Amino acid sequence: ALVAYALLIVGGPTGLHHAYLRRPAQAALWGWTFGFFLLGLVRDLFCIPRYVRECNGDPRAVESLEEQIKAHPKGPPRHLSRYVAQILAGWYLGAIMGCCDRLVQWVDPDADPEVHGHLLVWAGVTFGVWIVGSQGPERVSLLYAAGGALVPLIFSASQEEPAGNDVLLTACISTIASGFSRSWAPHSAQVLKQRRGRKRRCGFCWNIFKLYVAVIGFAPFLFYGIYQYGTLPLRNEKTGVRMRMPIKHMVDKVFADNESEISHLKEAFSHIYEEMQRRGVREVLDDLYKHTNRYAENEANKALETLGLPHGADAAAVRKAFRKLSIKYHPDRQMKASPEKREESAVKFEEIRKAYELLTNKK
Image (cartoon, rainbow, N blue to C red; front, side):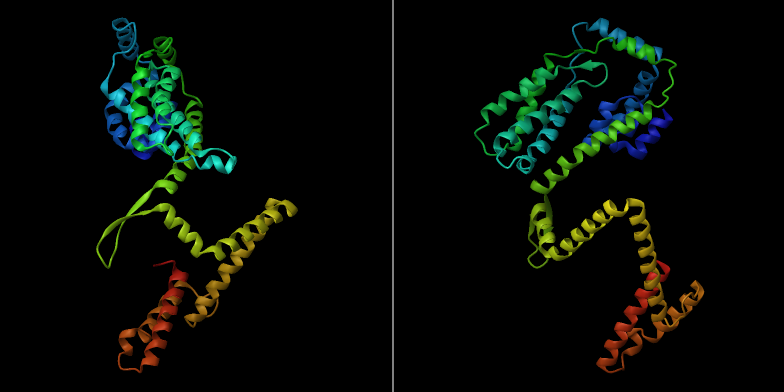
């Protein structure tokens, strides 16, 4: 339990503790939803002891599960918290996937973004409802979740883009439909018994691998959804009016303002890639390392010259020269000088400061 709590503290929002406790599906869900919007982490604080008993095949966990199956042979009891979690997960994944309708046009320019947008919402809602409903020893049917999610989307297919309310309604109906298929996982009690005394071996590493493959696979959809429809709250300094600036507009403006630099960067990476294909990766990386070291050495020598020091001066000499020159060229000591002299001193003082920061890595 101590290891699980430590992993909860270190990597709780990424589902690290669930990967350790042999719950890879819940670990992936936590990674996609940042610990189920951090609310799931609060619940985990109280549920980890039970998760540990189930992970280790503790007799108390097996006995408790067998009693629940005997008391409810037709299926697990219905809990409001599980339904709410299914709705939230379905709504979240459906909304994220629905934002990525324009990605389809990158793959197929002739594709209809309206149709694919609805299909992506359907897939996201279905998967979110199903994965939450199938946690632990409980299971819900993927077909029931998919059928329930399909009903409201058929009626909203006339809209150009799936609205947020439509996604939430889709998640609600999908959750209700999946509830009719709620059942116990086959041989769930036997699975817990088989875990008793079994060492994890490489299971934890394998679960970690699956977790981060799932997170990395979902990340492009999340970032594209944020880019396409996200906004940032801003305040106009002159008028004091609060507004919401689309992230897409801000990113596009940055790329437009730095188009030439980005073009040079693309050319540089293209040249490096061609050199790697022609000469080999190792040789090109060795050259880059040598050029980087040579550039750093030249910059350090220029900084030493700015401080009036010879090449190879030690840290003590750098500090001494900086104190002497900063006192000499400080703007406060140039108050009685002419405007031209004050401007020259200010430029020199800034050069000295930057040279000192470069040599000492202090800011």
